[in-house]
Image (cartoon, rainbow, N blue to C red):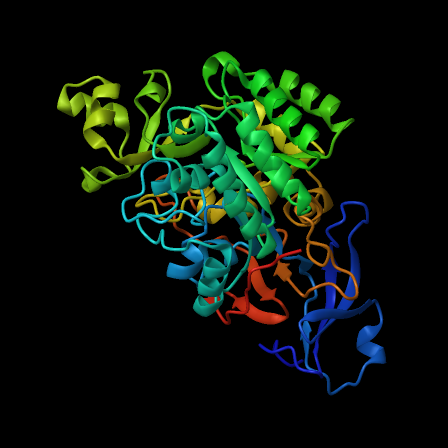
Length: 485
């Protein structure tokens, strides 16, 4: 049979004999043919290979799984889409769409040459897009290999409109933030994110967050929240975020839900019970990554001597990236907080979670998958390259926590529902042809903390908007674009 075509011409491409998992989470996998034509799924059926013109280009997919291209519900790829449009870390594990602008951190609309933490998680520069339209045009000009959804960060708005961040916004500053958010949403942004966990946004009060959430609600957007506290105050923080979204009238996404720190281990029983109660009154979801360590900026208050911490980057000592903080501190004969101060600015992996909590959260029906990967780190957390493969290989195939259908749903259809992507995340006639072909027995993550930049194993091919984008370890095309309502 003919090899896969890299185009979606009027003749199309037939994928024959795959085990199809449709992304809904409701239908068992079945053997099926799928026709790609003009960037979309033109037809599905068990006998298409018999009914269509024998001269039609086709690919034999026997023994392989065909699924919707994955959607990274929580990325920090705002700048990477422009500076590294091949997007190999995501494309190589089957991700076709990334949701950007999370945790209150977005390129838009901040204008600065020296981003303060936590904005330096997103990029060390590139803060030159004062409008969503300018960022969207830059992404399209770069021709990325994957699609993008853009959220607007509350912290970015604060930094653009406020000279001081140690207080709530005054009426004039809040009006300016609301105007910028309104403009961005009108230009195609899909919602608002906040990260009041971080110092530049921590002083924001309820009135400030609610006013911005109401702007997002008027545009049919979502509100994604890095909670104010993921440790002792996690229940209050969930309630705060949910009340804001409920009063504003828009869906809530709780970002990278976790119970961080040894004192909180086991509290996912409480947090998930609260989330379930809240979900009865409002549209609510959450995302999670399949690891025991998080990754963020270096913070002295997180260097508690109990949490293993691995350095991911340091401007002051770049040669130490990848090393354990405890070892660095011992060599310098300093306490861990003192070593953090000397390493600043920088970032690190914090091993704060317990496997029981991660498993419980990941298996929850409301939980979708977000990598939370940081593409600009020198030695990044392995979730950047491996999160989606690990969901299936470790929690599905090895541990039996998820069926293949459930795992695919969490990585595709569920995220599409949460972010209003009506033609993504499922395999049906008329939907966009974002597709992943993989070997379910081999699909696994290879990235680890020591060697974090390794592509997943077992991915045969990926199509983005009907164009072949990845095939057997090689990039093939760049057909991604910014998606909007």
